[in-house]
Image (tube, rainbow, N blue to C red):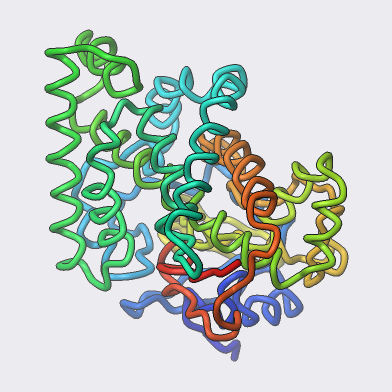
Length: 396
């Protein structure tokens, strides 16, 4: 009888996926898993099957479905709440997602480059002013995406300490009770911003939707607020984690850092390799089967949960030869760090640009940058949340 493993698996190294997934990938593409509440589901650990299932309309992202799998009790706090488009299926998903696209087009993201560069330079100055040693997270990695997404949404950055703290408590909540308060705080805060935007329109996605689609009755108010919260939280948490873990990864691979410094044109490819290698949003691909599905010799029954973590797919040797090797010249954008299919990350090009600016600038301004403590002493985040570090003390 096949052994059932627990899901999600915990990391032992903060900047790469759990070793347990590597073993599963070697054994096959689908495996039975047990979730925190005792329910059984499937985990997908190979690239081809992950892509096939992420694009399969028989798998649902509807988080209000009673069969939708929960990977922690924190999820129970939001099951009854109206989901943002990430928790919807077509056609509702596409309907609401399209409303957010104007702020995330390639042209719009490219136009943000000078502003992001300005923000990164200021963050570097603030890091230096903090003095060595200093925490990279609070002085550099977090302020850059936090300020950028604030401007994109039209959220006052003067409130950043509040929404960063509430986001952190929400993402790190150990159970449903702990998740209720920060989620409520964020929803009430964003609701007040909708009111303010209606009274005094200003640049940003919240004001545009409030005075456009909401005013015309094309989007419920609670859906608008849910979208704003999704973009606010995801827009700074994941990229801040990538800046942090990307820094650790490069410092732990000095030959690759040297190659990156020697060739500025290698930056975009290096960012793609960091996205593949770090896989910070490792538990994003959660679905429930709405019909029976046969794949790779396995039979997924309707109502069963299917977990598609991006880490195992990104370390599948059939797609990425010698996946354990961190190689900034690998040159592949075909990783699953941003998901795949209709639900792939809306803000992926913004995240790419922030990383392409923030990481080279950091090592340019701090050529002797190093970790204040060995990487082996860094504590990985809990398995059921965005991977990253709450603190990273560096010196120079």
